[in-house]
Image (cartoon, rainbow, N blue to C red; front, side, top):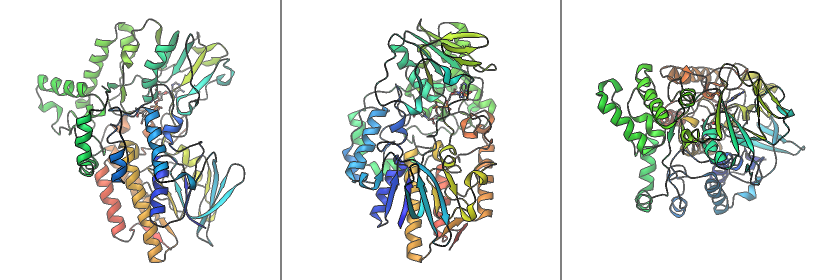
Length: 527
Ligand code: N01
């Protein structure tokens, strides 16, 4: 029997394998893709790029690794991040314990042996003491069920399932559906190739310029001279990144109008997600938020020449309530004569027909469609396989009213199963690499502790998970996050239960996890 079976060989899965092996645990990973990389294996759409700076979006667990790897840009593009994941797999010889092109079908917990029986499509199966779901919070593609979707005569793409061979849009009329991060990144690149580009927008988005550039050699050398310290400082911020641009805690109304504009402008010029750190109350006070929102709307008006298009691009929801996007020439792209914006707020898309996309009775003729429609976030990939815990309890039934777990790590009724960056943990509200490393360390330390203590079962207690979900929602409730239809709430997937899934605040979460472990895994039942 394996000590652990890991599902997924993205950044979570490969570090889980590396650390398990280093601790003398027998581990195997299953991966649906043909190689490591997870998100960065699947999301090969044009323009795909990280919105966390490269020097931060990388592992810190191995000093030699972080010294030897060189990033070429401030924000790395998908091919480079995928090469990094492959380098890590090579360096630690991880592929020998990964079964590729195998998709988990289901898993069931056997009480007698206190172990999991995991099955894959095609009938193969494995037995393991622990099941670790390292399936990623944004990996289950959301392909909307639009009438006639499958009748389209041309090629159809989803940004999260992009083909491996190059896609050439030259001479084609292309539709992009959606205006989230994937769309904001791909639209300017697709526009450079396509004969015509029509963007179908349901909700206008806030985007801040990336101001991407080649990585500065002096900055790289400086960070590498004290990398552990650099990472520790980042991990102490709420979002586990961006300590180089510290948040100004001052409330926005305490600044004079000139100082306010100057603070926003400074961050706009720096570029990237740190924009919302300009003042301390932008995500907690809707009046304060309006100042930042209006600053961005003003920028959109200044860039987009056609006033009607500029008006349609103006977001109305609080800024930051949906994850803000980071772009290179997104708004500028709408000044190109062959790019059009179709507002589908209120109407939605009526139908997809062989020749194009119909909205409010009007057929927009296109040759190719790109769905940039996001993911069934946080729970999608955990609920796709049929996972059955104690007494045959199904995870889908258990989570009918939303994900219920403790620390985003463990579910009552599902002993010895851990989720890496699961709902209820900070995950998507942080630098994912930092959250992944914290979870992997906590989970593997727990397994080693169990081995030393002669325990063979661990599972969250019901009280602990009920109060944890209450805590996650109370923390979010004190902010503007639950106030719009975001994927954090599951609002992007029709029929999905609305519950705020990620936890805000990385440092307090780490403290809680450490305290739980120090108290002999308080809130967990051990067998
Ligand atoms: O997905 P999204 P994404 N008809 O859900 C629209 C990370 N990421 O892939 O807003 C028409 O954000 C939907 O409209 P609405 C990052 O965390 C990071 O872009 O729901 N439209 C929205 O406009 C990000 O937040 C990076 O009204 C429909 C869009 O499709 C997360 O992944 C890059 C529709 C989906 O936007 C997800 O980003 C890419 C329908 N039926 C992704 N259904 C970086 O590191 C949905 N939409 C930079």
